[in-house]
Image (cartoon, one colour):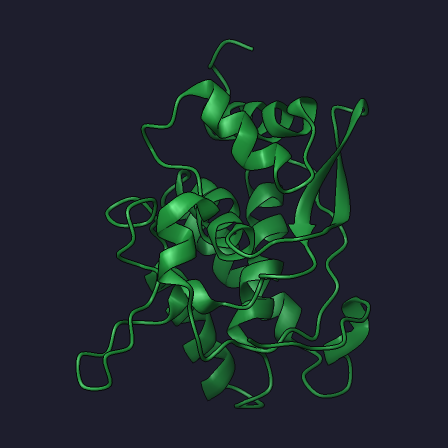
Length: 211
């Protein structure tokens, strides 16, 4: 399991001062090409990466100036979702578990951002876990939504938890409402905190959708 001491957004101010602007630029370009990529980066990738082993809700975002919504989780945001299966070693990642397989997308966008960071100024500095965490609010802003403060300094995991993701750690695409609510309340969310981010995201991606 990866761990790191998280600090403010100034974490890369000295080691890689252009890191955050580079991530934002790449996210803006991706969302401009395909608006739905904003949802893929924010809700799917970051959420699915964090939610499997999440135990504590750390950061909040205000939705419509009414609700404070947990959007970043202290434990679990470790980029383990990005790890590929390895038939040689027998390693099994989380990409092919039921909630993620043929559902989560945007991996190539994170790969592109990582490549951009690695080939410009300071290779080996910015973790994929931090890229996911930074890209999420950048994607929301690109869609016209509100940003939130992201603490940085995550380390990338070298392990994954396929079994937990496949057995209740993540909501399934065909879960009924009561199961979805339980998924979230088991992690410390209230029912309001479960509903509000989903509604906000729908309005950002499809502005004409009914409230």
